[in-house]
Image (cartoon, rainbow, N blue to C red; front, side):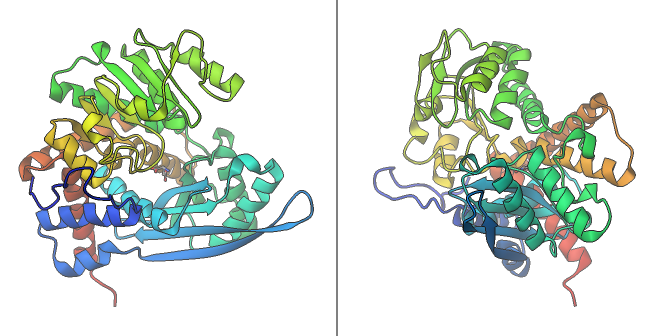
Length: 428
Ligand code: GLU
């Protein structure tokens, strides 16, 4: 590991938490390590194209509100662009540029034939009625429809979007194009061309890389303790799958509260409790713990499964896990990365750890195009093969270049994307 990125002491500098600058910093470091030529470096530092949108929506009370939306395509050298759509009040253009770039690396690491994209709308979906959400989604889809399509750019769920939102996207695109196009979006309901196993795919992918990491570290998963920040699609299903493998889930937090039980939380009961009450708060048999304290617990495996910039210079010294598995996108800052590395904590980076989601999105797209659907065992077996191989590839690349896993993952991805670009050439 070079010293160029060494952080000054946590108190002496203010960390730059802008996601796009973070993504560029990670990229620059890896690009230098693998000697990427300056021309391609310049191309890959920027998104290929982006749409910025004003989305007028007629609200239930008859008023009109204008929402801000975006779709960013980072790169399509290896295939159509791919990436989710998030609905969140704090969405920014820079964040989506970072997330689109991360999708390019993610798809390259698991070696599926896609480039990277991301979209989002600045809104709080919990404060919109179902009808307002539908009108907003349809207007957004209409506005991005020049960019998307089964062979151009294929959206998917992300933070606070789900199978219903994907169904509206599929319907709007299909109605305006005159034929049914299930391959335009993934993460759809099963009966509309969705794939078995897609809902669990991000968490199942995490499970496969965690098993691989345990092997490398000589740890037994059925003796491991786990803390999880975030109880959405990734966090809650990861908790269930890991506890089925015998791991002890000692703490879980959601956006409102956290719960702790050193003898292990009973995950199915916690899932049912959250479904009933809307939060994990006051789960019987647990004590309260803050969202921040979950990250600092003594445990073997820490899974940040919420949003960006959770492990920073402010708390990296206090992380006590042996391995951090990034189910969320961008939860660890570059300075925190270095602190964790220097303290001997392994970080399985987002672009590898959560790539199970987009991998099964790829399977869904393939099934839609073939109009032939697979059973769940088939999906899970193929996912396992891809995740195990991706972990091994990243681990080997990191060893070869004597860098941590994130930089190893970037070097592997940059190499694959740059190779495609060199071979295709720059048009015209
Ligand atoms: N939003 C997910 C991610 O960040 C899935 C993207 C997809 O399936 O296209 O990887």
